[in-house]
Image 1 (tube, rainbow, N blue to C red):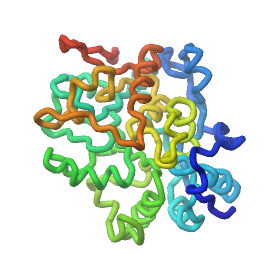
Image 2 (tube, helix red, strand yellow):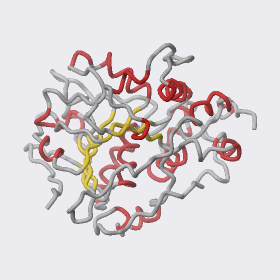
Image 3 (cartoon, one colour):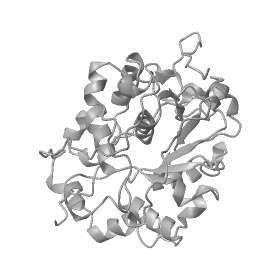
Image 4 (cartoon, rainbow, N blue to C red):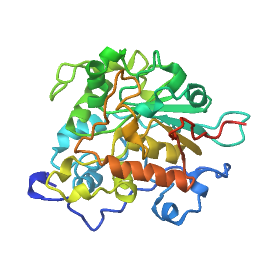
Length: 349
């Protein structure tokens, strides 16, 4: 079908199939009693789709799927894009060879994951050891680790990113010691296909060629992964999963505003919901809490700064959602009180 024109719509268009998603993820055994799959909260049970399609790859986007997904703006679909510009990249995306996480041998059957954001609440938290004690650690964006290990740990199992977050972090956070994305041995990279520039990035990355067009033209994407990029450990989140996260959990009122097309959950939000679908026990650190005004924007900043709100994200909605997920025991949200005490999270036995 011809590309739909985003500018025609003054607010998010809602189709009859807006809340219909591909659900074909392999079912997971319900060994862990604390898994989100076993949570009995009515709100969460109604919204949660345990078998939602998580990843996009070369074998699950055909012409029929292209036409369906072309009704949704990026990152939730392909609205406004040309078939050839997107599919050049999609046809290169490898089929995942293994789940994102597997249960550790000798464990109690629960996969424990820490999702670590960059919020100032972690400065002075001394949560590093607790974070590293999880089976897996997920980070995103400007994950400055060196010099902050006591507060944020030093392990990274999965790094969630867009082309923009990976490239911009190099110059935005250079003065704080950021040199590259985490590159632990065996690390897995999860990409959010935010827009056309991400598909252009992936084409260069998977072909090992310089990016041919767009804002990253002439860039060499593979050099941003610290020598650890392996397409067998590269995952691309599916537009259905991203749209489901937005529709079921983070549907902002700003989608009715004139700038609706840029409104989407943060990379951190997508990381949390990826964890809730691939882990059993999820603990979130460095995310916005009710007392966020007490802390710097980032944990690695010196001096006093303020949390910055960008118009493309609904930070208050995310803040309230993290607290709701915490209160319903879907996940554990790290919080601090005025006295500096901490909300502890469950450790491995």
